[in-house]
Length: 256
Image (cartoon, rainbow, N blue to C red; front, side, top):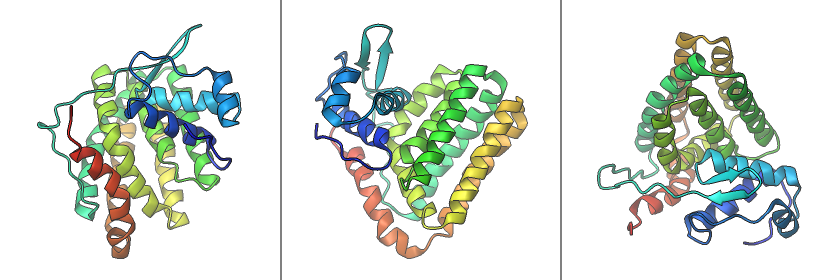
């Protein structure tokens, strides 16, 4: 793994580096990840950065930590892609369809979180939102943090089937989120709108208001669709296609 360069969102960069090693099989299922000290020395980052990176990988379902033993690679999901065909082409229509999938999941996830959240799970949701705010404020796209925020809500919902579904869909949602957030980042008012929508979801969950949480989750996804629809067509013929390319490559890759 190359040494990480200094810059915004070091934890995201380290998480992405480790994620790549896991997905490419350089770090295999059951294998122990390098220790905190080893990663600090190798990449020139702080322990806090390493811990935040591990937290992101746990949210994505890629690693597990064992008390006193360290972090270990989990088995990657092996879905039957013949039953679920998602071949986004970077077009507005393709990304809108991904948003439709998210709308169904996120609305119910928020509602269940409002009903079942604990003090600890609520704290994790708030921490995830602060991490997202920090990433955007420092100039990053906030994609990993955005996914982690919604994953924290799903964890608070305390439904293992929902968690497993989102864990599988993360490989699609992260790149789709990268496409939509790249568009949102072109206008500061859009970033503000997204933050307000996230805040509404958090407030409803904290209040234990199931109906409001479901409505806030639905509204967030509906507004995301509206923002995509209003995007400059040039965005979709240039940036949108470029950002969707890694997703198309992953989905069309032969499965062993």
